[in-house]
Amino acid sequence: GENVEQHPSTLSVQEGDSAVIKCTYSDSASNYFPWYKQELGKRPQLIIDIRSNVGEKKDQRIAVTLNKTAKHFSLHITETQPEDSAVYFCAAPNYGGSQGNLIFGKGTKLSVKP
Amino acid sequence: DSGVTQTPKHLITATGQRVTLRCSPRSGDLSVYWYQQSLDQGLQFLIQYYNGEERAKGNILERFSAQQFPDLHSELNLSSLELGDSALYFCASGGQNSPLHFGNGTRLTVT
Image 1 (tube, rainbow over the protein chains, first blue to last red):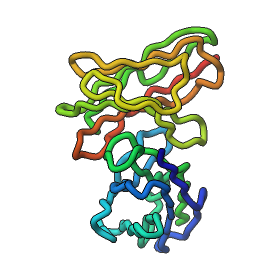
Image 2: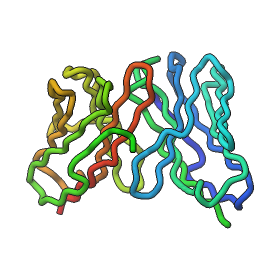
Image 3: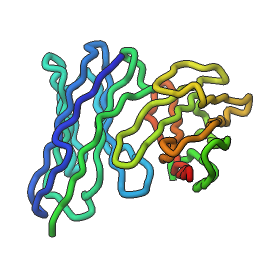
Image 4: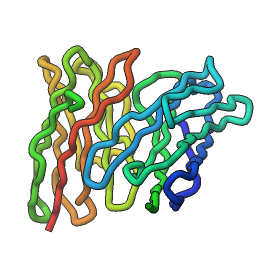
């Protein structure tokens, strides 16, 4: 099955700076890569996702890049704000291309200091 | 609101007991996924059901079982509970071409 590694485990930035979180995956058949944000005590919420037919996707201050050859993908948050503080999880599908049945990274705790 | 409903929100029980967690997927979604999140841990995939049938199994203990009913709601049964089973249990639903959406979770505390 799929294996997803996520780095760093914690990240502290000043408000207004950029934050980058990186993930690697093992199954070259995987073709869908979502990112989830989880605030303390709440459910994970999808913030952006990318399919393997594109290399980059942006949504306002958030972007995700994908390098299929190297089997890694990254989350970029620009102009960070205190409300961006949360745990971020990357994921990839288990058993190849299926979109469901996601395997998650261990998470990155992002702290944005005012 | 994700549209995925989980009950109860909180559950406190003693070791050795059995509990049932319930999940109703979003309207139109045929798949239900169960995940376990222990303190400071990531999301561990337990099991997936699709239209009433078990589709995939993850790190689910033999003491745990699940099922999906004809109305597509799902139940996760946890038996012979141990202290280490204390965790947040999330249900998620998603279709073939839609992302996973999570419910608000059930916080289980085993004392």
